[in-house]
Image (cartoon, rainbow, N blue to C red):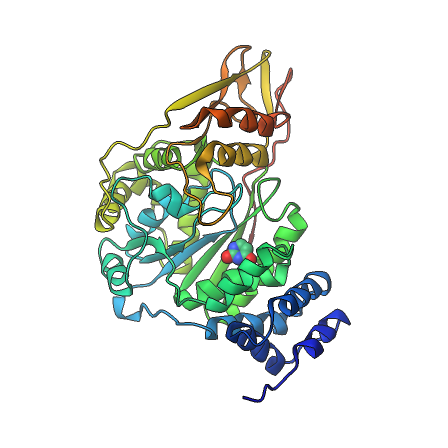
Length: 428
Ligand code: URA
């Protein structure tokens, strides 16, 4: 087949800060998926995009071309509104677990296609797989059944969804081009739009434990994704949230499930509850449900009921004991005062090194591994009290995890002032 364009010409356009035409973009995504554009050519183009950017029309077309590379799901047969949430990833971010069943309580179906962790951020599927029997892979028919009742499903995205993104993301991962805002935005939004949700709430994180370290970059990413969603007819809003400090008091797999169940039982750490409630209210409002009392549904057991039925529907035993790490090691406060800093990146790397995360995508994770936090910034601490408990099945990992945490926390004599709020802004 004669090709419509030449990859080298396309690279030159972006290298020289030009604008790609819709036809050039369609051809690029299609030709790369077919193997006509070589990895080294796509790497050069990705780097040119990282350095020189793309305009709104280019990003929108790039996203549409990635959607067109695969199947589109359709939930219209459910006869109820759908809403989904996507987080750009952080440390201790277990919010999807209590959030999906909570939103389903109010008659909005939640098709939550999730991923596994890579690097220092955890993956929702890895966390849920610590529940005995639970399985992430569902057929489209099974997914529809669970969405009908109990109404929320958290499962792995099938191979048919935006296959161009799978190939492109793997290439970006090894060529230093993950951080390009047009490429992140189109990668995330192509999967969410192809998934077919009616409403979408984005949790765009910024800070040491997030992809976007600065608020300015996070804001630009949020704006770009909200515009892409709206252009595609998906009612999209974003919350900009702080990821300088881990969410909640656990970072790992089974220990994050345990904390999520506490939230579903009406307890749990204040920050996890605050973000779960805020995102649930946004999802319900975007799906057209007004005045839902989401806190009441956490307190009175309705969200817990959906959770248990959702876990059972996917083969899991919601009442089974969760795996526990064989070994633990406690880090204690070296003086009296107030915890003034607890760095998300340090805790994320420590949990990862303890075995909660993976270095390569084929690696297994340890269900019981991770970090328990006993204080958060602003809390008073006494010399000798436990600050962090490190958990693993393989104690030779403690030393490297401790190295990751060195300098990652601090105690000050005075109560720290002006701690950054959890929710920084809302972008719609
Ligand atoms: N998550 C994605 O799915 N894609 C990106 O590019 C970054 C984060």
